[in-house]
Length: 64
Ligand SMILES: [Zn+2]
Image (tube, rainbow, N blue to C red):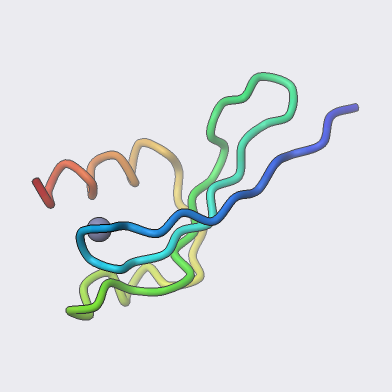
């Protein structure tokens, strides 16, 4: 049995906040959930939805 670890991460660029759940067994990211949209309102459609790490990575890439 393993216990998942959840941490909240705030984006310094846009003010968005994410809850990132990692597996206690492997340390890999399991799901990413937006808990606060960015200051300019982007990402509202993802609020409170669990997304997979690949999706989250693709969003992060877009912002650069
Ligand atoms: Zn951001």
